[in-house]
Amino acid sequence: MDNQELEQNKHEKPIPLLPKALLTGFIGGVLWSVVGAIAAYFNFTSVSPASFILRSWLHTNWSDGWLGQLISITVIGLLSVLTAILYYGLLRKTKGIWPSATFGVALWFIVFYLLQPIFPNVSHMTDLDINTIVTTLCLFLLYGIFIGYSISYEYLDTVTKDNV
Image (spheres, rainbow, N blue to C red):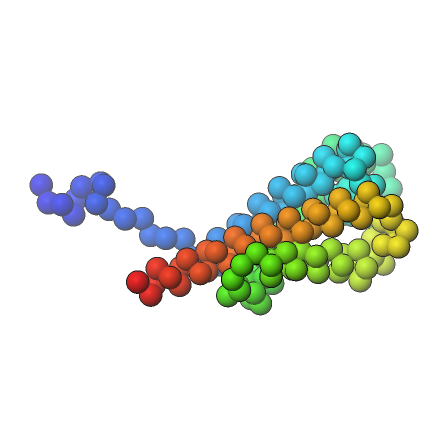
């Protein structure tokens, strides 16, 4: 039997980097939105995923419940794909954790300061209590590190493999 025909000698084609980045963005959005919903449930923050996505435009009872949270988490996961594209386009070649952490803090500032008029249900950044500020800043920091470091690592790993 020829070595090429054996199953263990076959190699899978690697997934291209951009689809990996998009998947990382979706998973990161869903993961950290779930953590944000849990933090809001335990009153670590007054801001939940539903207060951003649904409660800003819908003022119904169901949008504050589990269904509203589930829909909001899914929408944030889809919007997070755009964030991953942005990181992929601008910062994928960076090394280390600090560019990713800075990206997460910048996203927090953009969402809570620049985009605040879009979310009338969320208080202005200066009116938020310290627990909400610290919790959401940490969530965005971890989200930025998750997205950014994953994309940068995959890119640098791919470049390293291609040069070997």
